[in-house]
Image 1 (cartoon, rainbow, N blue to C red):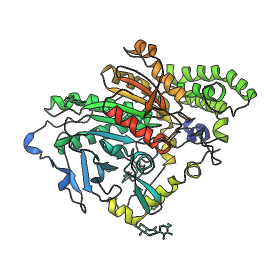
Image 2: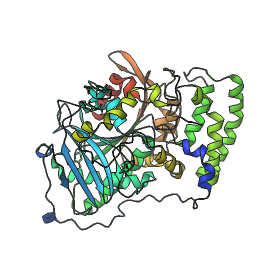
Image 3: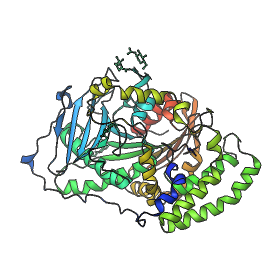
Amino acid sequence: MKFPAWWGLVLNGLVTSTTARISQEHFLAPTYQVGSSPSTPYNEGLFTPVEDLHILSTSEYTSLRHPSLPQYNVRIKQSQFCDGEVQAYTGYIDIEARHLFFYFFESRRDPDKDDVVFWTNGGPGGSSSLGLFMELGPCRVTSANSTKRFEHAWNDHANVFFIDQPVGVGFSYAEYGEQVSSTSEAAKDISAFMVIFFEHFSKFKGRPFHMAGESYGGRYIPVFASAVYDRNAELIEAGLTPINITSVMIGNGCTDFAGVVRSYYDIQCGDYGFPAVTSISDCVRMKQLLPRCQKRFQESCIDVTDKIDCASAWEFCWKAFDSVFLKYNAYDALRPCKGHADMTSCYPIVRDIGDYLTNRTVQSVLGVDPHSNFSLINFELNERFSEDSWSFRAEHYLAALLERRIRALVYVGDTDWICNWVGNERMTLNLEWTGQKEYQSRSLREWYIDGDVAGKTRSFGPLTFATIRDAGHMAPYDQPVRSLELANRWLAGAEF
Ligand SMILES: *[C@@H]1O[C@H](CO)[C@@H](O)[C@H](O)[C@H]1NC(C)=O
Ligand SMILES: *[C@@H]1O[C@H](CO)[C@@H](O)[C@H](O)[C@H]1NC(C)=O
Ligand SMILES: *[C@@H]1O[C@H](CO)[C@@H](O)[C@H](O)[C@H]1NC(C)=O
Ligand SMILES: *[C@@H]1O[C@H](CO)[C@@H](O)[C@H](O)[C@H]1NC(C)=O
């Protein structure tokens, strides 16, 4: 059975190999670790920042280290590709034998003043090259060996990172097969990288920093941003400049799994603007299965995390509601596609991106290590991460960020099924934080671009929910103008 698992959800391995994982050790919810790394006291004399990105070589990597993070090394070079107009950089974050690949594009407006944005795609196992070359990067892949400048890129008003994470995804790799299998492990590497980056390129120090992600990124990002936030305490203690983590941006996220499950019933059987493709008899069946699914999920994934029972609860729930994904494009109700379960047939550009990045000439421009293999979607990692999916409540991280006045934008292309707006809106309403009541009391209203309805929005204090009209799961791909306008208004701190 093939599920539309890959940067939607983690259902793949789960349903097919539940029994295989039953033999594994008892489930332990990973404790959230920050700054567990032994840190050497900061010593001015030991550290010389590189200062200026523009002096970096195009042919060779410059290595960056920081005495407070002895096990990390960052390699970075200029790379002339994609956006002919702004400077582009690529490189690796080396954590001993693990190597995370990244792209960095300066802002088209004012790199010296504009904010810094971090972007990751989801999966788990989806390469952020999808976000770069298909959604919001400065160019789009137009064939197996060509790209074209993209007008509505998010580096319009921001300096933007795209990171292939965790290891095993995209160009990121491990020398001896080391693996990262949970979001909290991945978060440590990301926060360390950001420290090294801001310490070296001092012109970016203190610059507002936004962490953005899509789909399963809706679970990564709250944890990553929390890791950055919590690490700041150590930076301050060491006399370093804290990272100015200002906001998180979650696009078509599947942040809260229990809510996602419930939304699958709503969008198929309720009047939420989705086509009624599911029969009444199936809806009645689902209605009866829904409370059982919720009870089982609550008991074995939320009240306690029992790995075996939780896996079987999730399997039960998925099977109860999956019919729509088997006959429809799971990522878009507006754009039906015969290859419903296969991303590359619904979105041919995905195959071109894979071919483009597999080309050795392109790889050498990017500075890709010769022995690494490009993986557009790592299915094996996707399966491995399935345990991660129940082990933490990403929404609690999001609420905790709001309490610390980190702004959160939860935006959703409104025709996506798999991480749909109904589940996302409910997730925002159910977030437990001091501003919850006020947020709930605000009405959902339309937002406009030049007089046209661009979507709906609700906002209170640091929290904003917004839909993007007529966009599917990869909203910036379907609605580039609306998506960029949304991003720019958010970065500028403007009302929608
Ligand atoms: C790889 O890319 C280069 C430059 O874009 C192109 O000339 C070459 O034909 C490509 N190779 C293949 C096998 O497509
Ligand atoms: C681009 O790639 C296609 C298919 O991979 C190939 O047929 C074509 O010759 C390539 N073009 C160039 C300019 O390399
Ligand atoms: C962080 O960025 C905000 C702008 O969003 C700015 O007002 C503030 O001074 C910055 N904080 C630091 C510590 O640089
Ligand atoms: C890449 O693939 C080759 C051939 O399958 C393999 O020998 C090599 O170990 C792989 N490299 C990494 C880093 O996984």
